[in-house]
Image 1 (cartoon, rainbow, N blue to C red):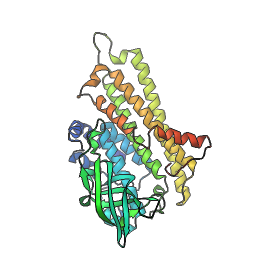
Image 2 (tube, rainbow, N blue to C red; image 1 turned 120 degrees about the vertical axis):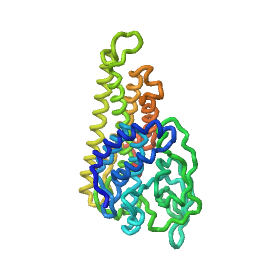
Image 3 (cartoon, helix red, strand yellow; image 1 turned 135 degrees about the horizontal axis):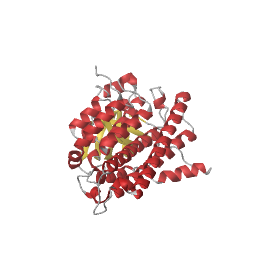
Image 4 (cartoon, rainbow, N blue to C red; image 1 turned 90 degrees about the vertical axis):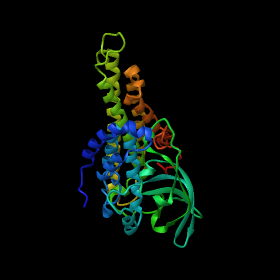
Length: 377
């Protein structure tokens, strides 16, 4: 039996480990085994797995805070926590025996891509799945990989889960930010996926009955990503604070003694705290509604609150990190400075479709009372 750990206490320790390995991880374009093993042993990849099959079935705020804390050490590690954990949601939609078969050990890691870029043909025992999915974060350290598909004859997208051995990985992840996430393309070519490992997050009713599985799926994904960006920004401000004694050029005064730096630092700190408070308030409101929903779909108000808060947090985090990089001056240019990596990482994270600027349009339409497709809210 694996000893249970407090996820947030474990996240703090792993953040330090991830920071130590960050330069190595960026060169390798994947997380080192020591970091992956620590995350798995701490349970940070099973936060969304049902309790009935050995998961932690945690409050969403725990997931978001854990991803945030790990990201203060290294954004890529925090990102892999967010993706790996939320991938475990699928197990809440599978029959318990199928979910238990997949989640064979407490350190089992799931990953993949929710976007329906594949196709599936029904067969007597399941589905024949073919497709290519980019942005499969952490795929090299996963035991199981999922891909979103359109099933022949069914308009609702579904998710198909296959063992790592049945999935091809193409080395495509050559990027500027979040390099160590190893978000390569994955492919399935005529893979037979049993019906027990397939589900639609749009039309299927979760088998697991806890409030986590009544919580809005896209809201959970968006807030987890936002948590990573908040962690990056917090790390950037900590890096800048550590440079406070630096005396740039021939100025005679340290960074910390300069009024403009003081004002900008205070403004950035205030913005980050406010964005974080809004995010966690929205999570708590949606969780309370999910706990009272008895399995029914939450209303637009709670789901809109999550998406607004997540996009605002990611946007603010990118602005705060950029300000910290700018205030650090020439020191931030060097590979030895974590600030240059944080700048690249936060802008990569903020490009994700769930927290990208298009989210403002979706929110604005709803707030203005216009007809809006809210299926992915």
